[in-house]
Image (tube, rainbow, N blue to C red):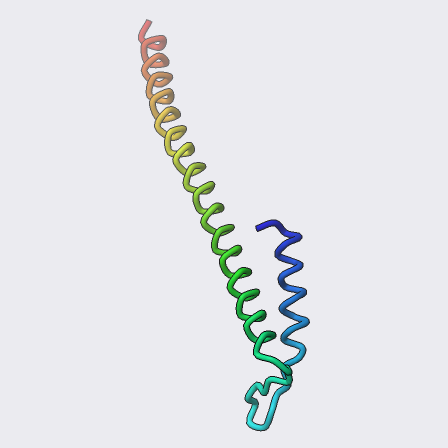
Length: 94
């Protein structure tokens, strides 16, 4: 989900939730005139949640690929370090 879409959803949610008032005992009392607005808020919340989950999965995949490449680089660096060390020892013995 793009940043703009996320901001638009958040703005819609904030507008809808501003219609909620706190009653006695801290319970939310809906000041909305129809159930449609409640359903809209639930759908908007779900869409925002699903977008954030999708973004996190995408980030996790990207990071896992990067970690795999770093692991491969570690193996190459270790192999090259051993090659350099053996070459250095051969040069010193000459």
